[in-house]
Amino acid sequence: MRSLTEVIKDAEERKIAIGHFNISNLEQLKAVADVVKKMNVPVIIGVSKGEREFIGVDQVVALVESFRNGEIEMYLNADHTHSIEKVREAAEAGFNAILFDGGKLPLDENIKQTLEAIRVAKSVAPDILIEGELGYIGGGSEILEKLPEDAAISSESFTKPEDAEKFVKETGVDLLAPAVGNIHGMLAHPNPPAGGEGGFEFIPNPRLDIPRIRAIKEAVRIPLVLHGGSGISDEDFISAIDAGISIIHISTELRAAWRGGVERELKENKNEVAPYKVMADVVNEMEEVIEKKLRLFNKIQI
Image 1 (cartoon, rainbow, N blue to C red):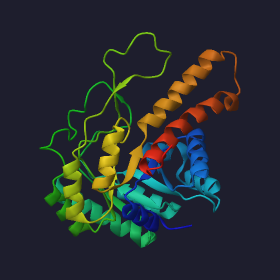
Image 2 (tube, helix red, strand yellow; image 1 turned 30 degrees about the vertical axis):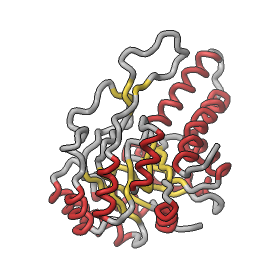
Image 3 (tube, helix red, strand yellow; image 1 turned 180 degrees about the horizontal axis):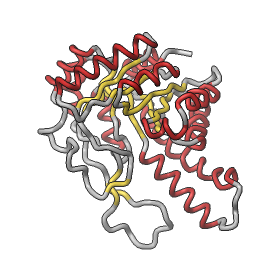
C-alpha cells in the first residue's frame, strides 16, 4: 500500500482531492469502507478528540486496520487535536496524520505550539504527517441556525497568503488547513418546506474564496486541506480542487444522513429491536453520500 504522502502527491499531480470522512461508530466506518472497496480510491478516516474518546484510540486504529486488511487505501487522521499530550497519544497509537489545531490562536503562538506538536509527533513516528490550521471556521460539525459569530466568514478575516507563507516556513508543517469561506457544520433552512418526510432541510453554505485558495497555494507550495466540506456546492468543490485543495473533510453531512436514516427506520419499524436490522438501510444511506462525494472529488463520471 502506498504511503499517505504518496497518495497526496498523486492527488496534487492529477488535480483531484482525497475524501476525508469523520466517523464515530462502526456503521459510519463500514459505510466508508464499503464504498472504497467498490470504487478503489484512497480515503482518509478522521476522528476528532471527542470521537477518539468515544471509540477508543487503540480501538479505532485496530478497526481501520481490520477494514484495510492490506487491500484498500484507508488512512487515519487524528482530527482537531489541541494538546501536545493528545498529539503524542495519536502518534504512539499508529495514526497516519495529526491535525494540530491552533486555528483560534494568534499567529506567533500558533507557530510556537505547532512546532512543539511536530517535534513530539515526529520523535515518535518520523513519517507521520502533521497538519496545521490557520484561521478559525467554527467549533463543531453540527446543524447551525446561523453562522458562528467568531468564525472567519468575511474576506477580511480569511487566511492571508503572507501569514500562510510565514506559518509554513517557520513550522515546516506537511499540510495546511486555511480559512477561505468554509465553516464547520451546515446551515438549517429557517423555514423548511412543509410536507417533508423527516430528515433535515439545509441552505447552502457560504461560497468559497477561490482566488484566495489559489494565492495561498502559490505562497506555501504544500498540500491544502479544506475543512467544513458539508454544505459546499459541487461547483465550489471542483474550483477549489483546481485551485490547490488536495483533501476535503466531510462530517456533518454524514452525521445528518445517519440521524435521518435512524429516525426513519425506527418510525417505520416501531417494534424492531435488532440493531443490525435497523442499521442496514442507514449504512446504505450513508454510502450514497460517501460515493457521491468521492466521485466528485476524484472527478469520476457517474
